[in-house]
Image 1 (cartoon, rainbow, N blue to C red):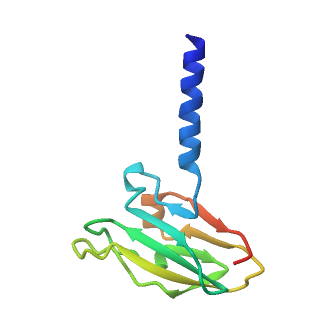
Image 2 (image 1 turned 45 degrees about the vertical axis):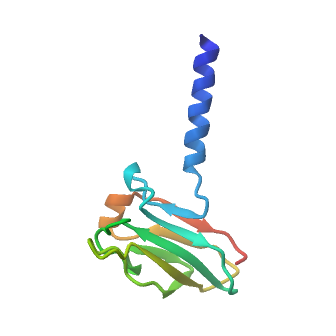
Length: 131
């Protein structure tokens, strides 16, 4: 019986450990129901010094509007970051382009405003160099 509980505990730990990995994604995971429809996920980058990302916010019907002002970027700036969300607009997914300021340093993404932190938590995504 002890082995069964030990095995179950290990399986549960491994499952939560795997879920906790970033996989190049900044999750809105303060409330687990928001994790899939609200996140910032890096995509394959084709240009040096730039990061491509897919921003999802409130799929499929939208949520409160999310803009670049809601995302803290250390060592980078939004080159193309259209607002998304807007309840009922169907605009819940955008491709964003981030220009890296200093390619010799890592880039960090985090939820920025008090409202976004209240909904999503204090998670961070660190993208190590090189880009």
